[in-house]
Amino acid sequence: MDRSARQVIETLLQMTLDHKMHERFYTRKEFELAAQVRFQADRLQTLAESLARVSQEALMKAGADTAPTIEKKPALTVTQLEILNNRSTVPYIAILFYGHGGEPAEIQEIRGTLKAIEMSLRSTSEMLFGYMEKHFAGEHSLLIRPKEEWLEAAIWRSRLTTSLYCVAGYFRMAAEMIAVAFTVLNKAKLAGAALLSEENRRETVLLLNATSTFLHDAARYLGLAGIELGCDEDRWRRLEVALKAILDGDKDDEEEGLEDVKK
Image (cartoon, rainbow, N blue to C red):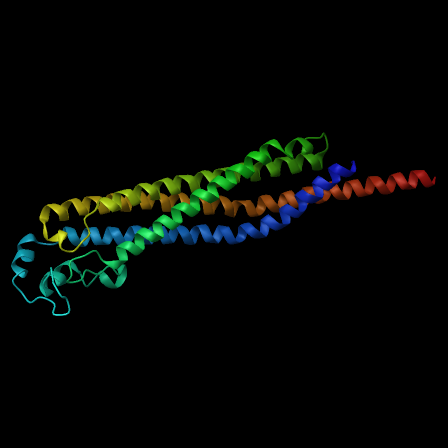
C-alpha cells in the first residue's frame, strides 16, 4: 500500500475510535430528548383532557364568587381558578392559571423548549446529511480492493454511513413534526379569561390534542434515531477490527519485503 493510502486508513481508524465513543453519548441523549418531547406532549394532552371536563354552567356560576385580592384587575374568580386548575394534574404538568386571566407562564416555557429542540435538530440533520454525502463519495472508492480485510472495512463503513443518513432523516422528520406542533399550539387560546368561553375552550382542546399528537410522532422519530445510533456500536467495532487488519497486513508485507532485500 502506498503512503497516501496508508494515511487515509490511519485517519479512518482514528475517526472510528473517536466516533465510536462519541456516539455512546448521543445514543443516550436522543432517548432523553425523546422523553423530553414526549413529556411536553403529555403535559398538553393532560391539560386538554382537564379542560374538556370543565362545565360551562359551573364556570358561569363561579363568576359571582370572590375575586383574588392579589390581582389589580382580576379576570377570574377564586372558584373559576379552582375549576380551570385541576389540582389532581397540576403537580404533574405544572401548568397553572392565575387570576389576571393571562396565559400560564409554563405555556411560554413549552414553546421555548420546543423551538430550541426543533432548531437544534434541523442544524444537526443538515450537518449529518452534508458529512454523509462526502462519505458516500469519498473513502469508499479507496476500500474497494480484492482483499478480504479491505472489503470488510468497506462493508462496515458503508453501513455506518447509511445508518447516520437514516439518523439525519429521523432528526429532520422530528424537527418537522415539532414545527407543526409549534404552529398548532400558537393557535390555541390559552389565556385563562379566553377559556371562560365554551367555544374557545372546545377549540383549544382540539388544538392541544393535535399538538400532542404531532409531538408524540416527533418523540417516536427521536427514539428511532436513538435505536439506530445504538446499533452503530457493533458497526464501529467491526470497522475498527477491519482497519487494524489492513494496517497490520501492510506492516507484515513491508517486513517481508525487507527480509527479501536482505537475502
